[in-house]
Image (cartoon, rainbow, N blue to C red; front, side, top):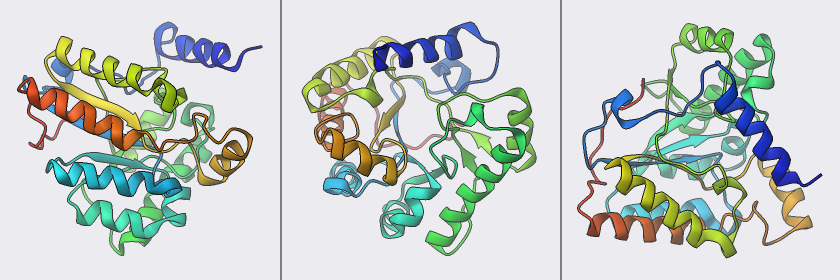
Length: 248
């Protein structure tokens, strides 16, 4: 069976057919002011082809602050990139420790994954960061997990603009991602954008790149795509360099 078909089925069931919480939201629900645009990046940091470093260069060029939702396993691998993210003024978000989809963890595993993700970030920086923000891997979580998130003192980071195909896109299809994001922001008059500068943990990335060097685990195109989005939105009068505490 086609892998993309399976992925679409899973996401369709998760996001549209079930009643458990997820990170998809709207500008109205999170109180985002009109014309505001905020970038969020999942699964990093990613040192392959210096993807995250080049992305940081792009954001610095336009003086834009984003949110980086980091996997603990990748944080441990690339702590120096984590420190640069923080020192460049971006907000760091706990994305859990492993790349396992949060919803498929039992409660004990979920709590441990949440705590270990935070621990990895704390050890990389040398101090604990506040506010304590969290975005569950896979974007979905159970009601019991929502209680655990609250008990551990975390706030969920949602998004309002994204594409289900973006994590599975490649350099060949990046223009489609760029156009879809720009179109979505224009339609909603702003938004919190979800992109991936990394796919899953670095060990899985190594395996997948060996199979398909130019496949979806090669995120080298993300910095260029982000710069195209930035230029297009700035030309349309959107506000990209203002911070806003939109997390719920």
